[in-house]
Length: 224
Ligand code: SIN
Ligand code: FE2
Image 1: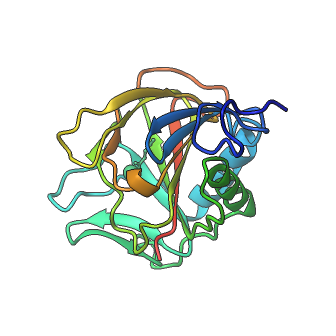
Image 2 (image 1 turned 180 degrees about the vertical axis):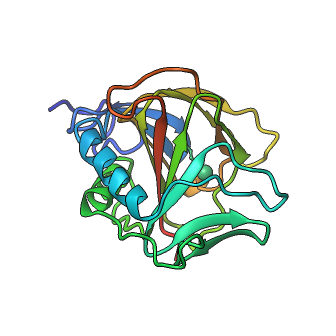
C-alpha cells in the first residue's frame, strides 16, 4: 500500500488509492480513478447484459426530436429518460411500462467505494444510466441536472473501448479538458464540480475483449 503525498486522507490529491488505482485530479471536486473498476469489469459487463435482457438498449429522442447516438437503458429505482416531452427520471421503462431492473449489489458497492475513494463518503445511488457507444457515437456537452439532489456526486464507470471524455466548467463556453478513459477507469465529480459540463467525443473504431465493438458507461446518481 502506498501513501499519498502531502495528504492524510488522500482524497483529492494525485497519488494512489490503497486499491492500487491512480487518482488524477480533473477539477476541484472531480477526479479520475484510473483502473478502479478493472478487477470488477467482467462482472459489471455481465450485469449490464442481464439488465439489457429485461430493459433493452434503445436510442432515445431528445426533446427536439433528434435520435441520440448512444443507446441507453437504466437500472435502479428510477431511470433517466428523454423523449419529445423532455428529460426526466421515470420509475418505469417507458418502452415496457415496467419498473427498471433493480441495481445489482456489485454496482452499488463499486459506486459507493469509488465515491469514497474520491472523498465522497456515504454515496448511495438510486439510479444507474447505462450508455452504449458504438464507433462514431458521441455525447455532446451537457450538465447532469435532472436529479433532485446535487449534494451527491456523479460516479461514471468506463468499460470496453476507450473514449475521449470532455470535462469543462460550469459554463458551456468553458473550454473542456480532454481525458482518455480506458476500461475500468472511474470519473467522479461532485461538490464544486457537480454541475460541470461534460461529454464524450465520437468513439473511435476498435474491438475490446470484454465488450466487443463498443464502450459501455455506467453513470451512478442519487436522483431522488
Ligand atoms: C454521461 O454523461 O451520461 C456519460 C458520460 C460517459 O459516457 O463517459
Ligand atoms: Fe452526463
